Amino acid sequence: MFLEWLLYAGIAAGIIILAIGFTKKLGEEYAWVNRKIIHFSITPAIVFYYTGKIPREVFAPAAFAFALAQLMFHLKREELSWYQINRNYGEVFFAFSASFVVAFLPREYATAVLLIMAISDGVTGILRFYYFRKNGYNVKLKKHWSGSLGYFVTAFLIAFAVFPENSFTIKLVWSGILTLAEYQRFLDDNLAVPLVATFLYPLV
Image (cartoon, rainbow, N blue to C red; front, side, top):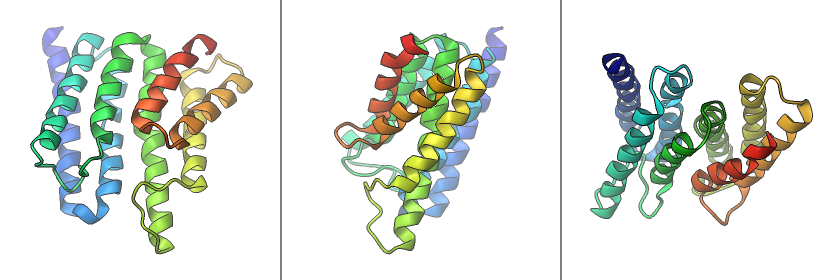
């Protein structure tokens, strides 16, 4: 069993490392897109977790270790500039939050939150990047309704896939609240979304 866990954890980690290597080729100009590609790349790890191929006891510490590794680059002022941005710790918060979600939430619900963090956040970031790029605006730290619409739609689809037994209204409200949590500007969305999702758990 341990060797099977190790195998799937290695595959998941390998996919993430490949994504980081691939985004390096795109360069700093696409740093905001690169971050989202790396978000997408944890989806296989999430699927392995959901299906029991990677247990909580492996996933949570691995995500925590990945957060610490990325934080070290910031602290040393040696950011991996093609996806890490000076004084923006979003990718660190993302990994810490993934560790927290898996460690403290039931597997099915944790899976939904992780998919929101990986897929919905990825979709919204890319939509916003290309919207502002197309219109000649500074794409950094921008929020726009086009990205929020993509976030809501994907969150709603994830809710349908992971919570098929829940009512349409609950899925709608859950997706809408998480979209607002992502859109607000007071707290990094990589912290806000999992935090709000945790408080919403009793309602789902």
